[in-house]
Amino acid sequence: MTFLELKDLRIHFPSDDGLVKSVDGLSFRLERGKTLGIVGESGSGKSVTSLGILGLHKGGRAKISGEIWLDGEELVSASAEHVRTLRGKKMAMIFQDPLSAMHPFYTVGAQIMEAYRIHHDVSKKVARKHAIEMLDRVGIPQPDRRVDSHPHEFSGGMRQRAMIAMALSCDPELLIADEPTTALDVTVQAQILDLMRDLQRDFNAALIIITHDLGVVAELSDDILVMYAGKAIEYGTAEDIFERPEHPYTWGLLGSMPRLDRERTERLLPIKGSPPSLINVPSGCAFHPRCVYADRTGGRSTSDVPELLESEGGHLVRCHLSRDVRRAVWENEIKPNLEAS
Ligand SMILES: Nc1ncnc2c1ncn2[C@@H]1O[C@H](COP(=O)(O)OP(=O)(O)O)[C@@H](O)[C@H]1O
Ligand code: SF4
Ligand SMILES: [Mg+2]
Image (cartoon, rainbow, N blue to C red; front, side):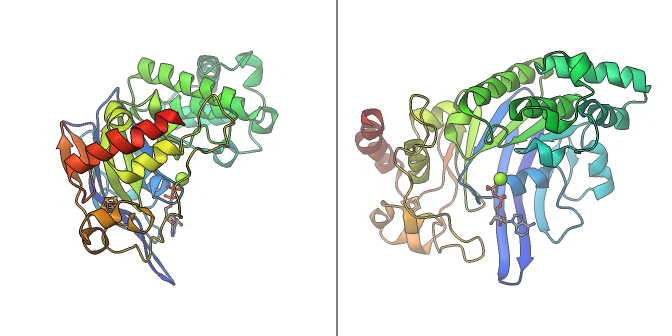
């Protein structure tokens, strides 16, 4: 049995301007001990997906359909109450901005203790000891003193570590990290990514890392799912995505990946145009207004929505170009350009 499986998940929000199709038919599987990177530009539906898995859209305006299977239980049809009991214990989330997820008035230790005591019937003393151990585990110096600090007394990197400690305090089996390092500078970012890799190995959790930056997931992910306009457009092993990517949008992401030897903000070749409206999604392939290969598909790019089809060995691609053409373009046009830049 697969540990986590999404089947045709849709999360749509009614609005005055029409239906916002934030997640529109997303499917993937993830096993324990594995890491999935979900990558896409801002507005592609990554955060809505993660909040959806955690059941945080339940009871709101969102129209949710499809299936989310977690360890044999289906969560879309489960009650909000039941899914709440799974949060923290079975699954937990690390957010981009720890300040928004932590309470400013309580000490970091008190918040970890509270998270722990919801699921464990232990004394305050035991919970405090556990909180100190967790802070130590995530690399916070002098944890027995820092446990009594408030979130604002921590640096950005330390706060992110504290939030990871909070998320891990109940030993969740599924951990979702939504842009966990976006707000941090490059050095701290690398430290946090190293930490997450160590923890994932020690805890044998299934990990989902969500980011707009392919560079972040390059080292960490077993598999990578590239999202565009609420849909998966390419899915494969990290090797598939970096060594033999087949989707024009993925090529664009690779070209715009910040490089470690350059200023972080410098993008090599930004993808032209901007992400589409999720209310009036472009006809055919949602990427067609920005795709320089759209005119090579005999008009299908603007008229038919491409399916996500297997290219080879579990590598899935949503594009009307033939596999041979995609491979030839990658080998002869894109790859040499990336290597030269
Ligand atoms: N609660 C909501 N109500 C209406 N629209 C939403 C809501 N949450 C997100 N959206 C819209 O869904 C789209 C995807 O958002 P999000 O998942 O946050 O993107 P990202 O990939 O940057 O994380 C955006 O267009 C956003 O405006
Ligand atoms: S289907 Fe057409 S527009 Fe979409 S990525 Fe492929 S070539 Fe580009
Ligand atoms: Mg987001």
